[in-house]
Length: 241
Image (cartoon, rainbow, N blue to C red; front, side, top):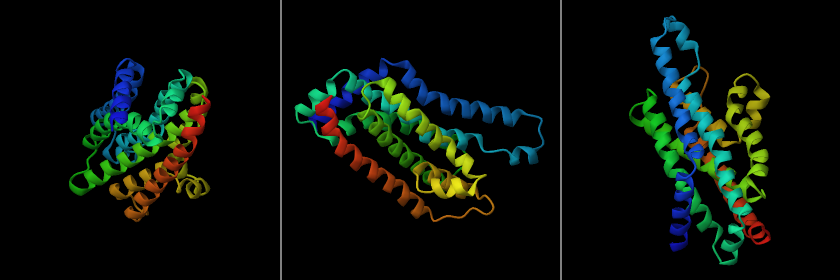
């Protein structure tokens, strides 16, 4: 527990020193709010506005599926570059302690961002909480995927080269899946597509139906696989750093 606290405090300090990182958690809901405001004040006919994609949910999906991955990758790749990860592994710090210490910082800040998105939607009651739960599930998936890229990268630049292309696919993939059935069949196994499926069900789109428990199950299966991969790679990569 003390190890987790120490890593948590270190990461809080590092994050507060990096305004660029903090901006990632503000810009997405900020853009969603601004776009929503513009649409409400536009002279476009209501039926035309209804045909447009939901800007809040679109930005929420991009944030949870794309925005977080490079951020977490950069945090961990920086530890590798500084050789601090080597000292942690040699000191016997477990992968779970290291991941929780860093992941909790990102999860807490992302939780505030996800809550902001939830309040920007028109969801109420149970739908509100289902949306928030799906966002937080996707956040956990992105934290783990970003951590995995970070642990196999020697420096933040190499980490970005790995993380950004995958983040773009996961972030924008659900939108492409709406127009291509082959892409949809492939992406249905990934947590970002399931986040999109859940929000479509909550919106009541025609022709969209899904078992929400199955969608959450797929998301957390992603989380489990990524957590195992991180644990397997952590010690080997940490010691060799």
